[in-house]
Length: 332
Image (cartoon, rainbow, N blue to C red; front, side):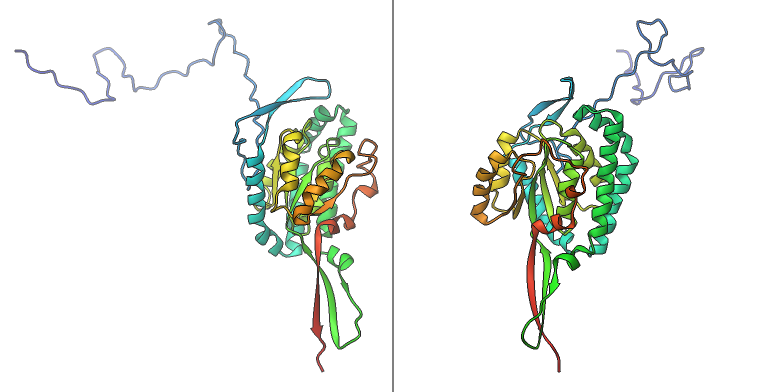
């Protein structure tokens, strides 16, 4: 019987005279070629995956469904998540969890955080311009104006963070030896139905006054133009905004609006982006837990000018604030 051959350890190479080791350095190979002809292959495009934004993270919808998003010319842009009722529940839960921390921050700190958002948007300005051009079907000049207005609006509301309470609150005259103060406080969780048109500027115009006061938000994005909103959440994720303060849901409005409006842990509803014909039905859903509801314009948003001064106002901050009145005795 022949002796049993000695086994080499795994991962070693047999060295033979006149043959180089497999572990020795070899010349760098050429880059990929096409059909062996030596020509560099064309680079494959890295497609972006658009997801939800819930609790500071980017999950896919629990259903695994998606829907197609087209540009203004009908060309396919991307697939967006088609969220479900459970995704709405998850977003509301994340928003509720974030309320104490966000409402407990000083007004000056919230101002700094909102300004940081504007800084990051400025850094991604060209990306926003390109996405607005594709979504809205407008030229570069118009898209640039809309994006610049959205960034400027963040800065504008950031400046109001530590000032709106002086405008909305008051010191009340009373007949007695008391001080009487009316102080605005955040409502809690606000559901925002974003406008279909002006997908970035319109969203910023409705979102900024909600969160500047200490509220948290669950945003149902534009159905046909959700991509700029998703990019905005990427800015939020890399800013100082705590997870859960803003949560974004994409999907079909016919499936989601009623779930958001009827959720018992949503304290307020910004229905500005809805069709006026739907407002009455949404308000009925909100009465079950006495939601504050901001209705859409009676003529709809078709002729609404998001660039006008009326589209930004410190009084919009007061739409989702509660007023607490405090009595304090005057010392002798």
